[in-house]
Length: 231
Length: 333
Image (cartoon, rainbow over all chains, first blue to last red):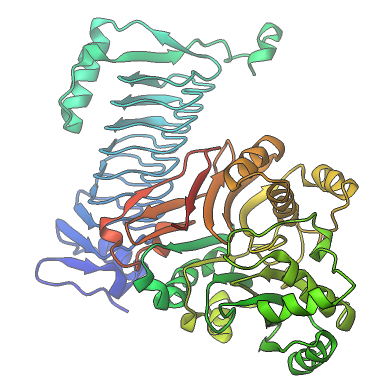
């Protein structure tokens, strides 16, 4: 069934189905701004977008919303299921509510903003994405993070930054525990500047001086028998 | 993957809609386990009328009507059967069973050799009456499998598309105050009706599981050494037997699930219901999905939000994901 495109460029997900809606978003003549109504927790909405369009989702989405995004700006006016903005390359994804686990997993670029809380493994294996979370994040966030920045205005769960490579983490609240090879690091002027820019871009009014920086101790890069207990 | 749904109604005005709401929730989870399903309803006036105990049977070698006749003759009390192929619901009045069991010199042993369990909350009834009915069933249809027993609880299982099964059982017409359902993607044992969840091995208790236990065999051996018998090779049954044993030994549901967290390894999101409670718990890694929504009128749990999207007033619900290793319990007020 073809997607129903109204004058306001509203695609009704419940009526048209995910496949038709995603096809319409990928069409050559897609309008510059599209609203998706009645998502009702549908999976894989607005995935694989590869041009500069603005998509607003009116409600809660299921798994993998806005995955593999390039260039597009996707705003979810609700909460998101597992793997929102997974493997994003560029563009912006904003979740006005909460996000489930693995938000921004393996993402290479772009900006993911979660205004509420994010669940476990936020930014797992992040490879260049910037993630800014207004609330708290769950356990094992930024696990094996390789590049990019994770900013958390609330608290972080257990094992933050476990087996971290080079991603940088800024947390304003409490950290339940740090994972293997993740350590607290000093906030130098360039970090305050970087964080201020990130917060401003993400639309949060917060003082960078209130944050603590965490990063990799780089002990796990190469196997060393003295570190065996940390693996 | 497995899909879990559960609905605990707080507002009696919603009781007539329980079956419809639960069917809608289950339908959304078909993708997660499309080949078999099970469901349990607490308080349906047809499947488990007030003042009766209900025993649910699977794979009875004796047809339902004949089973009811034989049980009525053997026990001296009227036993009613409802044939919901492959499940049979049997119920008998508590008062009749009490007088029959009092006049009998033979006191039935506990179903499934579960240790003694006292009344789990339903007023005016005890597990003893269910035991008497189970015992009589075992002598008439020894190969039939008891998949649920207790006052107010009906458990239904089958192989096939979950929505088709639910409609075939008549779930949309069911009423009651609580229901759970499960769509199964089999990992630890075969796709059979008896491998479907919920596993109901204690009076009024149900457990549904998404995930797999990695150390279930050693726990099973310990439970077997304690005299507990098993019906299947399913890892989830081990979890259910463990919880039933803890409850039988006097633990409340919260404590039983905290103990389960201590003992079981593996991946799990569990929904556990009893005659007065509704509980959710996840393992420490919490990789299996779970979402809870709560309003003044109901508490609902599902594997994914889309199963909750049709619940009345979901727009105003408090929606959250349960934290790892935290036990959430709601009790019937």
